[in-house]
Image (cartoon, rainbow, N blue to C red; front, side, top):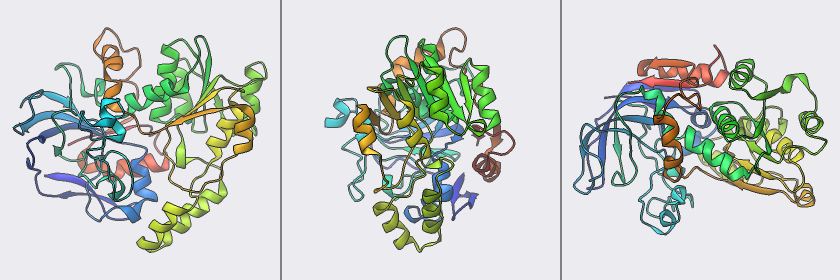
Length: 393
């Protein structure tokens, strides 16, 4: 089969690899019909090379049709249409019993002291072959796959793999009060959907970005926006819009991709130049992140408010303004999305009348799998208006 494989910094290729096969009774094989490039895939494209092997298959946002199931998989059958959550969870361990599926104890990667294994995402998360491929082996398929109805296009459902549950959790974790306000930093796919979900719930939403196409997309969906290029002080601009207090909540949907934090950018650049062993040590012990968005979030949220972090950060000793956070009485919540925890909330919005979250107005590029390297390049460089890239095997 064909699959997108990693070969080094900014070097992904579409190659012929072995077809997957059922290895365990809880496995399934799906034929992928749509898969996506995620913003966190760009971390592999840029800075997480020390934790990924040459030839590893990328991707963690797939959906498709079931081809084969193991003996213990009973809730799906060949021919079913399914979405595959990006985290791999068993559904019955201590953590899963508490709906903390991203911390599944059955698939935790204890060698690196990390949470549940993820598809297509480095040795840190199990080095499980990913879903940017024609076929995918799905471990823990007795629990993970989400069955969806036939009929609507893949774009209606594919974001259940990551974007929608991550965004829903970001809003849940933000604890916006009834009739309250929330700022969303970063209007990439997660920020776009977080903003739309928050607005759907009746909150006032202010989105912040510097990319014109992202700002325009947010405006199309009724979001107030601030262009970071047009103000030297985003938190002050937001305070001026909110009686001097700041918004009740803030969602940081940026993470380590933040602009404007020179020390973090330098650290990432230096890390990328080191041999793998040295780079891995630096990444797990040093501060690598550009924290501009998180710093702005802390300044923007009102006293006693909540910050919800869905953007991925990678450093271990990044400086945090603890005095300011303590003084303002800020609550901070974060973490990988517990995908299946939110499916019952989301599914009616995808299967009912209309498209209340605008899921069919998110992808800007739909490419055949063979053009995946081009998709990565334009997404990473924010060229050609790329906000979300879908691939069709």
